[in-house]
Picture 1 (cartoon, one colour):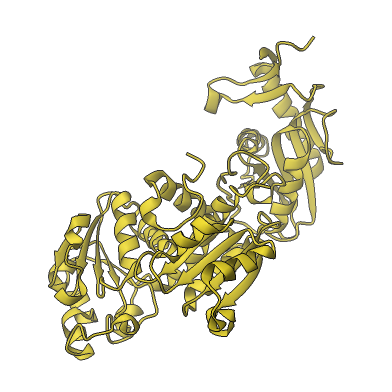
Picture 2 (picture 1 turned 90 degrees about the horizontal axis):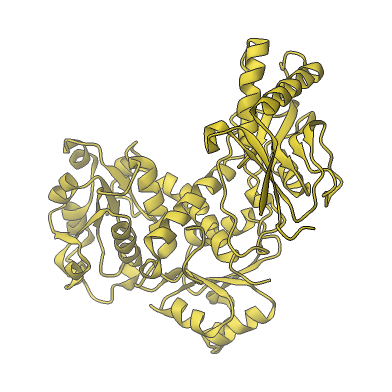
Length: 182
Length: 309
């Protein structure tokens, strides 16, 4: 696999800031809005957004984690079982505006499962989707994001990975391309 | 480790420590699921499970059925009392007939030790043993381990005493294997006649004095006296048994520490434990039942992921 860094620390910071202001545009002071990150990688985007938004708005933003393992459509279609992560939604989502967050929007299947998983907790008034990276030409399902960090045009055999300082030691977005690809 | 090493859950003896860790970890997530407003997940939509109960059961059968339904599996129930078994059909024939109706997994309770293993070698389905005679009851041991870990934080180095009818108890045997694999120390306590002669070969301590056993332990699992399995008299009277091996509030309060009290059910109130102990804040009997559903969901989920499409 050939590695190419498509976003660095500075870009990521700018993008996160812009996303925060876009969110504030739609949700004002976040009095009725909740941010929910999809496990396993969406939660890191949420951690950053929360920090940024709290600095701007000077108030606490309610955030949660949602694990979608049991709602996936590829159970028994994989070699290994799907092992769940933690769900952390200890608040009522009834009537709230929910912003679902994931790091990479690719086929849309994760988001489809995320919607099912979310509705098991109640009936939100509205659900929006924030994708930090949108691989826009690779969708399997009719799902689009409301807030997009960066659009990345990729082939399906390529892979995009978002890495964070807290986890991998550096903020960067990497595009992996197979060696024999032209 | 993210896959079970076994294709069937026949007994704890066949499971590795990593298997048990995986089941308990997965069960934690399912415990969250069953405490949500909508307690159901769609994972097993295309799986059909048959519950074959050749022996009476309330709790285990309900618990399995709930676990299966909360995973969205299709469920068929069978109890031997009103079936062709009475007309002379063999176990393999009965099961194969049910499997011809496209069943993927079988949960079976049977009065004969080894019935689950026998079945797993002869039919093409995943088998979960829900108790085979006096042999093993793996899901009960897993839920007991889960419950102790929930209370004490870990099993490593903890001391657990199993009190009562060890001779006839599949719960005792599965618990001994499970707790030892998870690093806990196990002691059995009961009248000499109800403790198998060579049980110390399994590496468990043996004690015939209930007070000493309770002073030693962090958690006590009080088993039921299984009168239905006792073909001869093993002790003079229930009254004498309960005086020597029954746990009452006075004895519990006289200990200098708070131990966890467990019971796999059904309770004979006033025999192995008194009502005030069963209902005390040290008793986790009802938490065990709740955890049972989560642990069984984990077992079914992990086994089902190994069924080929």
